[in-house]
Length: 140
Image 1 (cartoon, rainbow, N blue to C red):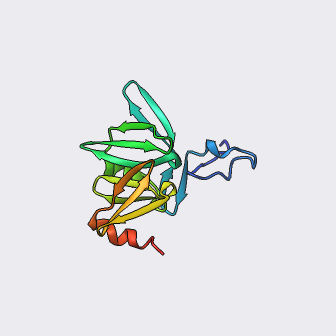
Image 2 (image 1 turned 180 degrees about the horizontal axis):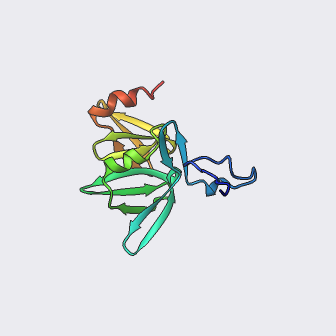
Image 3 (image 1 turned 120 degrees about the vertical axis):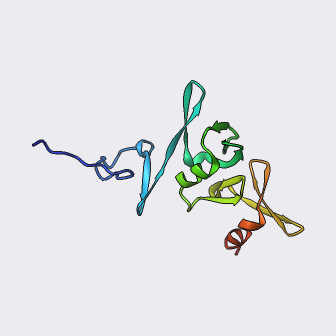
């Protein structure tokens, strides 16, 4: 029987120490696997983006608009709830029925008349009352 190498998603122990991180396709967090890079179906081609570059996602009926930190816009055929399950909850949080944000790109939260907004990429993204308690835990 030949020697077999079993590689689990996110396991880099088999790579040499000088292996660039860009070759890692995902990370394991307990039992969950969160991809480092995803591919968006854009018609006749698949566009790859690093998950860390995603600034926010906005629901658009059965589709999701994905906006990157440099304002690139991609339309995914997956619904926002499906995408939410694929993202690491340490960085991505749902702040509204229609929005998921990447906390790494959130630099400013403003409040007007007891409403809160995340300011990302020159866009004010509202926090719904339903998610407000979760957001207030981020305020120190």
